[in-house]
Image (tube, helix red, strand yellow):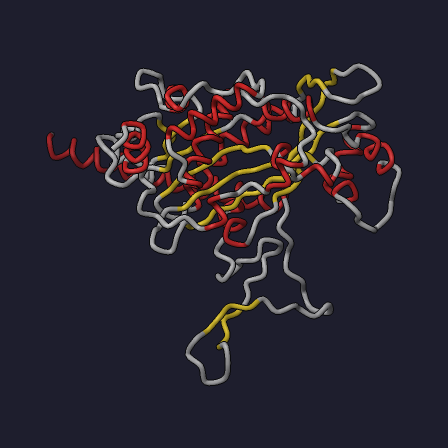
Length: 391
């Protein structure tokens, strides 16, 4: 068998996902229109062209000689950044064994949820996984938001900063876009005429195939000040992180994944200097960036908010309604939880807000402190007993 074909098959054989039937939506996740409608005249980097040629080779079963000829054709068409041959493609895409692990790749311990750079063991000395991982850790590729913000603002169409001026004087109850939302209006009042950026976050995960428990979770953001027709295009989407796990993350693991993202968002709220394209005045602006909302499906929402499952008691992410369990039909043993609306004349459930969350966290911290004190007291009593026996 040809050496190059053996290399490709070897890469596939060593792939941990090799026995997984990839769903069609993951085979070609990019719409053709995203390429055809791209108005950019900039030549893609050599590594991007190499990756595209490998995908083309696999998809259409092109021989190595065919890829070599295609590389020559690209060179003849004056595409200077095209790789010269399939050998060059391998050199570009094969990992360098001596290269250090990326500083953005971490592993989340499945037991204590501590982040570590080691694939073999947990860095927490008190964890049962400290000597070695008995269960596979979560593979977490963290991508800084700031750099992606800079790149998008540098090439994005003119931002809708004029909306911030128009909506600041608007008291309309009609919501046409995110600018009319209460959270956005609160920032407008707080910033008092200053320009700023706002983000919406999406957290979503999917089981890769029915015959596997492997799941993939992605944290993405969009900039609300980018006009709506461009806002959700792939080139304007920020990826905060990608997580590969052998099963669905639990709430503690999700909080560990969100923690570095939250820390960066808090820094961005203080403001950064950005080069913004399409401004009449100076292209450099000091802009604060605020996350104003998260848009998730129900399972992801329960993980992000740290609440019970959507089908469990108090599973509503908007209010503190307990719900009730009822049979799906008369005389049936199968039951579901429903959240019936409460009549207006009765007491309404409390809404979940930042304030109620802070109250809950205060109570949680107090209870945790009491438990720690009790644990410390019991240890002191044990020490006294040991000393009295030794005396």
